[in-house]
Image 1 (cartoon, rainbow, N blue to C red):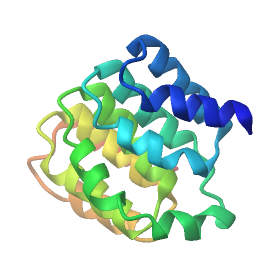
Image 2 (tube, rainbow, N blue to C red):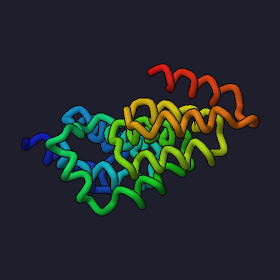
Image 3 (cartoon, rainbow, N blue to C red):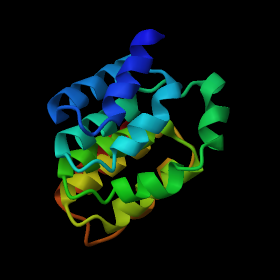
Length: 168
């Protein structure tokens, strides 16, 4: 649609106001159109925190139904850009991205979530990774969560999120 193309254009131009670019990313997310993936994923690396937050949120809203799954799998940026974004300096970006990765699903997204669950510095980020794994509905998520749950040094926040995730 014309609206989606204009939003893509607006977001992609760093000379535009960052607050409006963030709102435009929210609009792209509401469109749920996979054709905006390039713009959204590139925005995960933006200098502005609000733009990155909106990009992570928009990514989780994209329609990754079966008709788009093949296109997603063919995109070259998935692993590097999403793995890098999962280590963002802003906790909200990290948390939104964990849920988005769960929505995306697939082997690469699950691998990134597993890495976050095992290595994140903040307990809340680990908790969001557990929830992302639950949202994924991936068959491999349960064993990953159960393995992490069996570790003795697990903080209460992550433990609670894993129990919740296993129940979803």
